[in-house]
Amino acid sequence: MDFSSVRLVASDMDGTLLNTKHELSPDFFTIFNRMRSKDILFSAASGRQYQNLYNCFPDIQDEIIFIAENGSYVMHQGKELHVQPMDRDLTRDLLKRIKKLPNVLAILCGKKSAYIDNDDPAFVGRLSMYYDKYAVVDNLVNVDDDEFLKIAICDLSGAEQNSYPHFLEYQNDLQVKVSGNVWLDLSHKLAHKGKALDVVQKKFEIPREHTMVFGDYLNDVEMMGEAHFSFAMENAHPEVKNAAKYTTHSNDNRGVLSILEQL
Image (cartoon, rainbow, N blue to C red; front, side, top):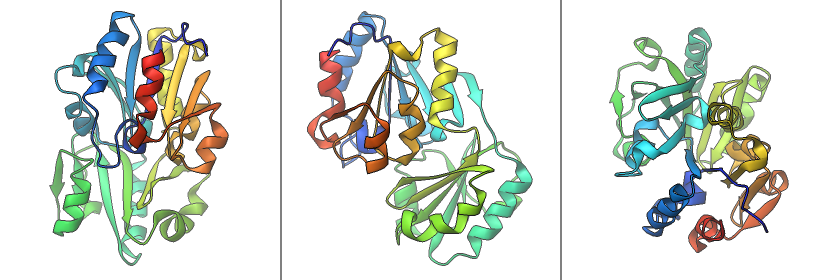
């Protein structure tokens, strides 16, 4: 396969660039430097918080384009390239609805910080994997000093089977995305990785014909349509494999890095 035209690479993180222990291979930094020497840009596109994503790439943060919160927030060199906040009233209505569901916990994701109203150690341990900056508050509905980018629902019973059906009625008004086994994300209708990648492509004048993407879960589907070279991981959700043109090895078998080495 001829990758000589590729000028932009965007990769999901969990289940894709990171292994199942959520670790970034040290080999990535060597490959990244080779990519930059050829003027190929790299974007980390994730459901993770911007502050968390930033800290995943020590010493090279200024060379990374960050697509955070499933595309709600795009940052580069400390500058905002794109923000797609949720409607405040709708956000509060959703939070009240989530509160009535059994055995689920919500994370209100703002630009400044994430917010939770439950400090259970198991929950905090899970969320701190994806959110470096968070605050514990008495009531999420009362948070008002921030722009809301996303509501992440943690459902240990299984997001796709348990929580997702409760929010199907919002699909015409919101992005309702299962982003992992226990995660359901609610965000603005236009907030997805495909839209964010389109913003990046226009900013840096790189068309989809010169773009490569990698993903594994349902919040990556729109991104597959924005790149000529779209790769689903071997461990990807079936819908992602259907949306992608190509497949690569699993995230535990250097799937992304093997393609980037060819690039």
